[in-house]
Image 1 (spheres, rainbow, N blue to C red):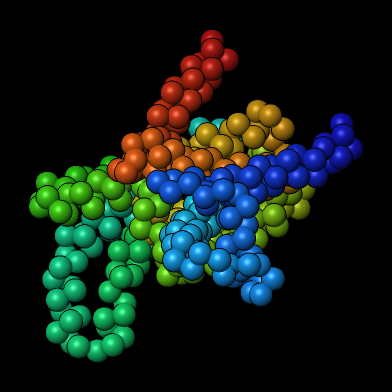
Image 2: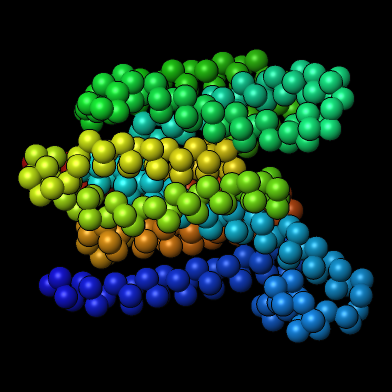
Length: 363
């Protein structure tokens, strides 16, 4: 069986990688202005390998095509791919750590902690921006666009540190207490966000609503270049945890007997997961259920082995987010739906189905 699974792994990952490539090209071509796949590849080629692709004909149309594909859609699509991969991988790791398929990155309060920090930042953004402009320093003006993403990351980090501290600290981390602390922090940060919504004016309320539901509408090259490298670093590290997660499925005592440093592994999983979720939320807002649904679908299809589960979840999560983004910007065009609405429409019923299936097994 293990040989069959080992032989199946490259086939599954190859098929999912092909799906990612197809979704990538489709995302760059679909929208208010439809761009044929050949033109998409031509624009990409003109930037990646200048001089080898003809972009000289119809100068005005060519500039518009380049602006749509390269400046607007490409950073949005790249960010969507990496955010989707990060949320799904974090979900797969947390489900393995807690040995519970219902676990989700929001379980530790990281997502709502980031959302609460963003809510506070949006309410105070005007005063902070005015203060920065009063200082009249070039570096102060330059950091203003990063206030909300930085607030989201700080909020997720502070929430994580609080939850881990309540659970006994990194040296003696108790998973059951960690879950309870996460539930409590979700309640507290949710109340903070609700109070911020109560105080917000109309403009701030629109920003808060879009951020709490999540979306890629604010994606630019600046945001992508700030968010993608740390997310890729976190994703690149996760394969090193695959065998340890497999051992943890047997239980912590059994994993210890197999030579797994359980406490260190738990710290790594929580730290890397917090990085993936915190940076993702800082870039795209709170997009729910990706970390729950995607790993569970992969586990149902290909089994619980994390050597396949982690990369397959990353690839499928990338596809799901970009497909949701395509629907979000085309279904009600020229308006745009928050991605969180679409993922919740998918994830909510799926979560209820999981609960019903779990109840049937227990009875």
